[in-house]
Image (cartoon, rainbow, N blue to C red):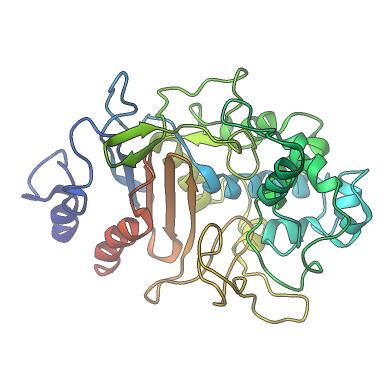
Length: 374
């Protein structure tokens, strides 16, 4: 493990408690918002360490119990909640949106839960619908008054058709995962935050993880998001879309995400067979491989025109010949990345309360050193 020690400690491998990882040097200065890094190997935690501070007011140091907004890393948990309800017989993957959410307009009759899980539904982008609404009727949402799940549903119910026929194309869809949260809540007969807590977080002992609802819940040891500007960092913790749940509303910490990773490794929540659909790349209705939408790169379109492998809440493309399940999160003031290499027994998770760091490259740099040892 010499290479691991040098990478993580930036010094002699005899040091018992790793100092600043070599790959992080210069990224986080004293007193800045920072990040938390988790490395797990063969079911054991190799590193769980924070760098920087939770916020610029109290300046408490980030550690393994600091709660970060996961943003779109939430999607793998939303998918798991839906899968548990499918196992219970309360939902089916082929249920249509009009069946799962009675009252949804007719264009939802061809959209299934499977389409929502795999980003092949063709639902309109709710953020674009927000923009259209506000252009016509004036400001409606802000960081102080963010859009709620029910309002996303209302916007989608005003539409008469999707942007493409379900199953014929692939486009990353926050709209779909907001609706999955609502579908799960209806099927379970309780709020989605309660579904996540009762079906995932509590059974796994993830006591510091929750779907955050302002005024109803509190994040333990909460990190606040920040944006780096020419004059320094500015707190930018919430946006007009921060209150939606299924697409990005979960807060968690390294301590709990180690438990989540272990549950995935050991199939503690869902058996290998039950988990298989989540780890199988979707194909389009004609059997072809989906591709990222053509057009400009940016936002949620990471690789225009290139092939994409996605299951239920997981990207599934390999990296340097190693099978991989991964997902990133990116929202105002926060970034997150989960890189899992199940066949190699390796997981790297990084959470940041600042929006200027390239966590994908950082996580793969850490993973690359460890994978070469196998």
